[in-house]
Image: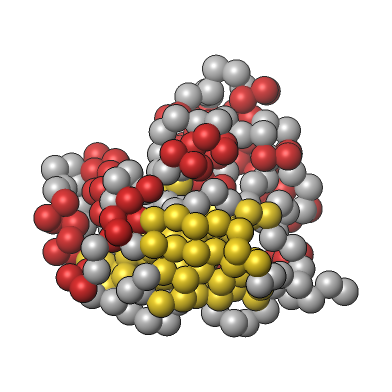
Length: 263
């Protein structure tokens, strides 16, 4: 894509945040767009957010489980940026009006104690860099109409990022086998899904390795203190005003997201 086209699509996505109206799929108007083009569009938005006072607080890996790849019709992971304004406190009402088409999914969040930079990062390197893990709920959202996304669409749209709720019980990595962490997801008191850490590329640690090695050639380092979301253990579920969603993870505790009551 030409530079002007990249800037134009980035502007349309930013406008969707402002108006609350999703845009048509990018791949329809730009059928030749590549994954590289999509990341350029994503970076254009990130620069705008940073200029507006936001701070990068971490990254997310999306589409890292077979369930999510099947649900979204894609065949590879992607990544997006987590900005300071995306983090919400547990048990505090989240404004659904701030989203377009929100869905929610349970994840094991890594909090880094040391910088991590690829290429060449191994599982051992990644494990040494993790200070602790937290149960988390990611709110995914799409600025693309009806979630009709290709891999290009979701990458350009900051990997369909929306918001993050972190649990408050830190657990050292050495105290848990992430592959075997079981998860139950309740919405409005009803069990809607179960999953396990092994659904995320075999282990969420593999997702962290993938991210570090993917970002490294672009000169990006995962910094100490950054939060990394490695991907969902279940499919994503739509959420609406009045919902309460609880993810309970064996050995890690639980995390609760509360959405504002309908007006």
